[in-house]
Image (cartoon, rainbow, N blue to C red; front, side):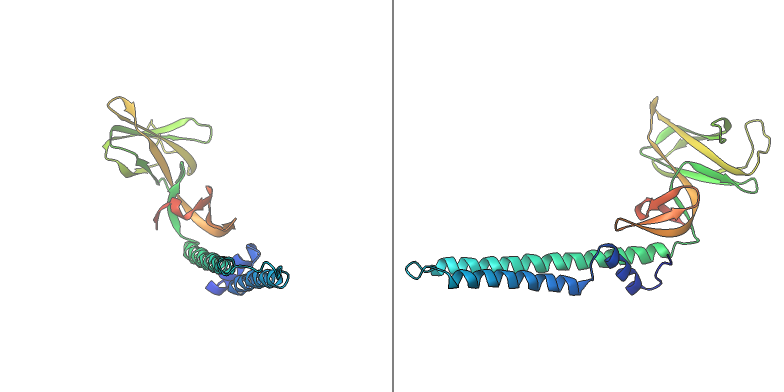
Length: 225
């Protein structure tokens, strides 16, 4: 199925996924609630006991309830409209990333032309950081000693050589980050460079379909190239 190319198209698509028809449907729902309430109140007034009519206070309370129901219905409709607008905006933002390279959660590193790059995020500063690059069998190919590093994002490069100084074939590899501070391990989140192939709408959430890493949400993207 081809993706819409306009904001109106995206909004219509989201509406159809949610099984709704936009603001008109919400307005109709509010009118239905009001109509049902008025019918119930009218029927109650017609069938009340003439010897024991409804008190003014009780009638006022009934009307106040109708006003509350109407207000809640309008608030829900407004919130739904805002949500649809936000989802549409997210979809348009994500669509602009198709064909771009992003840095996102992942532990892969692609070696191309004997050059590779990756990154990671440290929860706190570390006295010693080592990046261990592995092949598809989990065998260590290269160990990169990066020394002390501050907390936050740390980027690194790989020249395509193994621990013996020999070139390894281009292709996909994996890496593990080992960080320590005063003899204790420091949490490190690996980040990988990958290309964005398409945009996926999953249960109302906008996700990026990446090359080799599967889907990623927008808030998982750390950098765009």
